[in-house]
Each structure stands twice: as C-alpha cells, then as structure tokens.
Image (cartoon, rainbow, N blue to C red):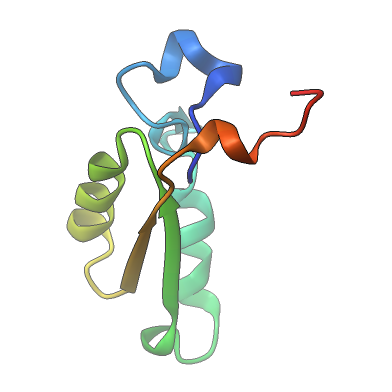
Length: 86
C-alpha cells in the first residue's frame, strides 16, 4: 500500500490507489473480503506499508474491517525503493 501512486497520478493525488473503486469496491477490498473464506479469519493479522495518504487507508480498514488485526509501517521515502528503470 506504500508508494506514491505515480502510475495513476491523476486519480491518486487525493486518494490512495488501494481505495479506488474497481467493480464497485475499493481495489484492495476484493482481497480483504476473500480473507473471510480462510479458516480462522479472526486470527489473521495484516501488516500494511503506508505512506502518502496512509491515514485514509487506516480509516478505511478501521471502518470496514474492524474485525481484522492491522498494523501499519510508514514508508518514509517511497522514491528510495524504486528501481532505476521506474
């Protein structure tokens, strides 16, 4: 969930790409909803790497997935993790 969303810059300047609607749900909501099909979904812990607009991701997960145990790591310098060809 980290990074700057540069590939979708016109869309992601005010909303993280993971929260953009795809087929009626946030991009990552499709994945998160599938976690409920796993055995013991209450035991799942998510570690999310967030950066720019990460507070929106935290708020979204708190509101729509309060049953999931979530942790957040802030990516301080997302450009440092890009490959030279990016």
